[in-house]
Image (cartoon, rainbow, N blue to C red; front, top):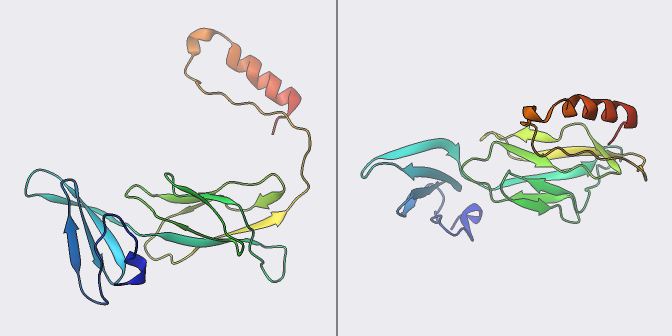
Length: 170
């Protein structure tokens, strides 16, 4: 069994260079050289390739200001469906899913990040995020708008823009 295929619920197992498939009512998952590929089942007897490998996404979050690039523990990382935290070395592994398009990290308040999202690509082996320490702000204002499609509410959006400009929230 290839190590990248171990522990997967729907996936088949493969040995180096051999292709093996598992079929359910909705998907077919095949494994070739350790990379799982997902095929969606369409009409009976027809399959539609998703075009993207279904595989775990691995990477590291590290301190770019440190000359040894020490890993940062506890940073949340997501594939858009799953969220994991980095381990003591700053490493993470996400299971991935058929619609994974980006790997993203949550920016802690005491760290700055130059790139918060990385587009997924079958050629990328590791999704690494560099962060730098920054001073933590103890006091801030946060504004969250859940529904911006309320045009019938009048000039509230202009008033909110003025409020944001005047208070400079986080």
